Image 1 (cartoon, rainbow over the protein chains, first blue to last red):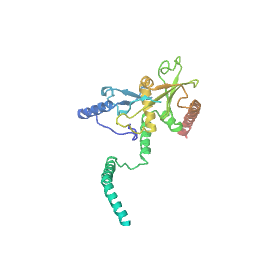
Image 2 (cartoon, rainbow over the protein chains, first blue to last red):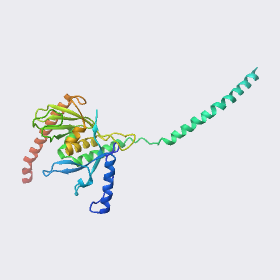
Image 3 (cartoon, rainbow over the protein chains, first blue to last red):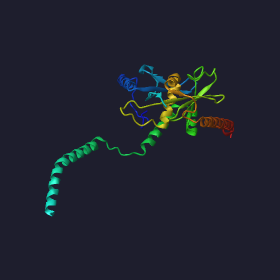
Image 4 (cartoon, helix red, strand yellow):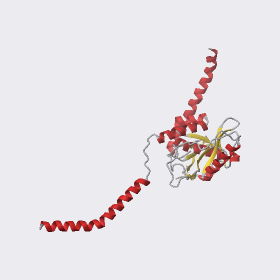
Length: 77
Length: 207
């Protein structure tokens, strides 16, 4: 998510490919270093949707089809 | 006499030009530099609308069908709270079920599900820190999705990040109560529709 623009595709690849995975890891790290939060849309066993906040690439489920980065929350007025 | 005046004027102009010409040149070069530095961004009236359309599609792909319908029909999403004793600093709910209402670019409101008593407002923003001068805010649906992800992913973290206020600080409590009433009506209507379609299905398949 990008303010003023909405959804922007940052990177895509197949984690089964070592080259792709390395690129995804680097991009993931870059986004977190830029201060963004990362979340993976998921489903619980009952089928309810929720988000899983992830702080490292290792936390991302291998079968996740996307990771959404969004600005870090801050207290508002 | 006239000749003297003309001569005086010419001398005055010549003297002043020495002072004024460099300043005029400097002003002109500054103006040109400013023109070069400021990027010419043509106004695009559809940019925000397209961003919002993309954001709505993303929101729809992430939240539950009921939540999407709620947002589409009512303009907000309800997320159930999961903490055993309610959100932080809310004085404890003694185990009573509670939930949050998520509005775009407004505070998150916590309330008791049974009584509709408003607990607190949680003011939270998602500022863009990736650019030195900041930028425009998230599209409405992205703001809702960011709150939804943060609440369903780590409720405690979001609530402790937010600034807590008593109800009424940002959202009119009467409006929130009205929204809760609208939500109850909306849920009843959905349940009626679901029951009706279930009762009609066997007949349809038989017929």
